[in-house]
Amino acid sequence: MTKTFVQLVKQHFEYLVLKYNFDLLVSTESPRGHPWEGRVEYVTKLTFIDIDCTRGESPMIHVSRMKDLKRYPVSLDTIYEYHNLSEEEKEIIVTRTPDKEFQRKASEILYSKRLSRCVLISTNETDEKKMDFELSLNAKHLFQYAEPFLRGDFSRWLEIYEYQVGKMWAEIFRSGKSEFVLYRAGSDARGKPVYEKRLVFQDSIDYLESLKEEYRKK
Image (cartoon, rainbow, N blue to C red; front, side, top):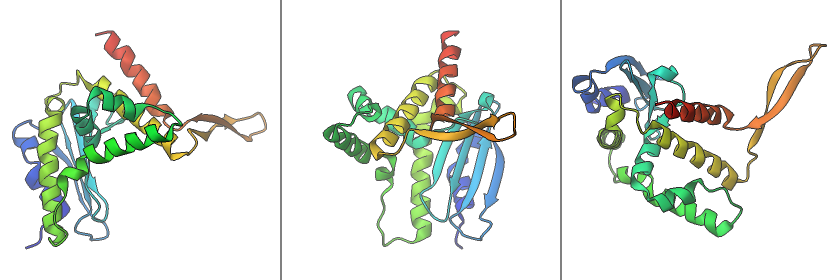
């Protein structure tokens, strides 16, 4: 009998419940009936884990702090990179520069070290086998690289989130897209909308600054 995405997630991430006392908060199958689409969420008083997949794409795993109301997540890909890149490589990844050779080097590092390269499987396998393999390795890597977060230990949360923001900002720069967007800040006296320019990741940057202040007080 074919297992769905949600069933495979429950199978491979069961250790979250058994070992770390997570509660299964959400278990949603695809509204379109797609077997490789769904969302599963696990939660403790301190940690939130979100595992989702859209129409058979690679599953996405994110970790966030419950004290942040599940906002500002960090992806498992980011956590994996942070632990597997050298300090020199991380510095290259987060540097915003117009130097094309430097940008090429950053792209090569990300390609060679990204988590998805660890979950390659023969294209001759069935879709269920591929998803089963991906989720089994993601479950393994979540335990291997994010285990302190599973225990509620966020002592390294600041440095990993800072890397994630730096990486996102540098990727926007390398893409040639604008680092700014217009957002509606309110209305004038006549009721017309007032727009202001802000950084694409302004919310994440603001959160990062609040994190730095939080950790300074510890």
